[in-house]
Each structure stands twice: as C-alpha cells, then as structure tokens.
Image (tube, rainbow, N blue to C red; front, side, top):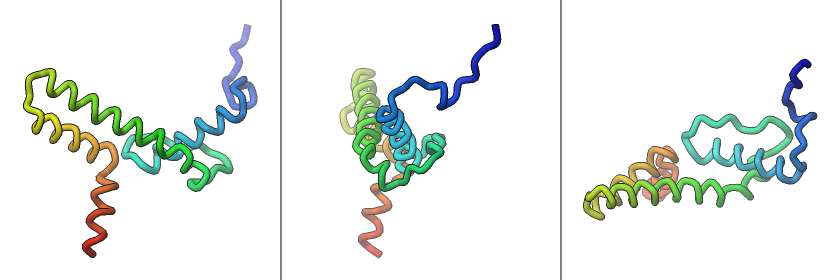
Length: 105
C-alpha cells in the first residue's frame, strides 16, 4: 500500500488552528534567532502579531527554566539571573536591548 504524502490539503487540522500555528511560526521567526522558517502563504507580520505574546511566553519560560536550574545547581541568585538574561539575549538577538539603545541615538 503506497504511503500518502502529508501536505496541507490532506491535513485534517481545523483551519483556525492551522492559522494560529502559521502565525506563531511567523512571529517566532521574527522575534527570535531560532532557525524557524516562517509559514508560507498570505499571512502577514501584522496578522502574526496576535502570536507575539505566545512567543514571549516561550522565551520567558526558557529564561525562567535556566534561572531555576542554575539556582538548583547551587549558583547564586545573581549568577542565575545573569545566565537567564544571557539566554534571553541569545534567543532574541538582543531585540529589546537594541530598542533601549535606540533611545540614546
């Protein structure tokens, strides 16, 4: 029996859920340095902005997890916070810090 090729036409995911997933991928590709390919299609960054809080939750969750692990390993709170901030800088490409620096231009 031949295998079916999985594509969007044969996908049984409801359209609104697929749209949210595509917007989340586009938002993650824009807001992070993760190697995520934005969803192909008619979606725009303006439409994907509804998923920005989800990406922020993901980035913040990773930073929080790094902090908790660092403190559990016996590092000081200050060092754990420094590692968490560094993780955020790496994940986002210092997007917020760049915006803050632009205030001084």
